[in-house]
Image (cartoon, rainbow over the protein chains, first blue to last red):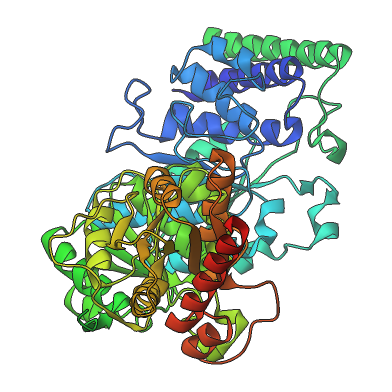
Length: 284
Length: 321
């Protein structure tokens, strides 16, 4: 998928996320919007997947370690055709598998997550199995920045480097906010790149809300042979809607009917601008 | 009655059996947390180094990595002392293995009070309670070398998450070769009709020795090795309890949440009410000493169990006089 089309997808995904959270009456709004562009690029450009064969042995694996932001994953998987989009309307309803954190009951989801600091260890196991079997599939995992204070993240990081898992791509959704406030005020993470480098990763930093930049950085993996890849994606929590952006209170605030209307109107405008921009380019 | 013949530690039989199976299937892996020595896996590591994944002293990562390997089709045995595996790695067991339905075989070694005088940090008297409260993890506690070998062979192809609980003491042989072993099916070791000794793991041989003492004292004792807490053999436990006057359960675990609790809730809800005593480690600062000394302190001895059985039977006779 080309950059222009990917940019359009992100706008559409953000609309789906907000509408489904409003409909379900629960969800993690800010964190889903911050990593929308990352999942978009992974699923539409980077990963080797077959939505009609979710357990294909040669598929690339994705572990959504920041499991609370499940709504973005549901939006992308539905769009890819892993399950019918109507399933999104069952989110949070009695008896639905589309619960508030990912489970393997939903086609396309590799591992049940939601307790933080679990995804990386599982991703290490998957990547290690690929190495042992000489298979070329890759393993991607996305962690939130607030998640990084879990000690298990650093246990897993040691093993990723020890086993030289250059088929593992770890992405940090560095939106600098967690539920209480700024990560640096809750429990400081910086110097984050230095810390990950010291643990043995090849580290790169990217604008995590810039589609072209994301496409470019993923294309550079493996950054260094024999080292696990780590991408610090600098993002804006709540990206795409002015009054949701960079606001800790939107961590799991559910948009009211009025807020949803305003948010969707902003995204409509973004879609309008996107159409005008590419119409201009096309007529040049 | 012939005296019981001495055998090996169940942990040794585990590692010998696993080595044989792993030599035939390169997808069989052991994941260890600096626990090769205690798990008697040094020989395995020397002979099949490519089939050992070492994570260092990091039980959370041990369980998570095992789940990832299993999801990619590996037959994974995650081996670590039961005290650390089922406490430090507990959330990973709950979410990464049981909830995610990854068919990892978690092997808790030196379980219960195997580590004896090393103290409570090294005891696991909670593992059966917490794992019984998790959905989707089977629990197997072999009594002797035969049950251990059979359990490992069954575990290889087991389609669900499994916890295998092993001790480090050399055990006596309890079963004749060829005895059927099925996960979830209790094994009768002695047949009797007055009292049933229902035991699990390393306490089964003590129950067998106790039954022999009781026989010498004129009491007919049944002995069941309940090697699986999940699936639990409700049928055998109920049928046995219905035809005896008293049931004594025995386990190397807290008296809360283990075998005894499982038996008691089953019997009460079925309206089957023999005299019942749950023998295990009580809710107190655990007595210090070797496994044998701790067992002796809490009456987990042939004589202690026999006396408990006799007291229960006497109580029943008083009631029915």
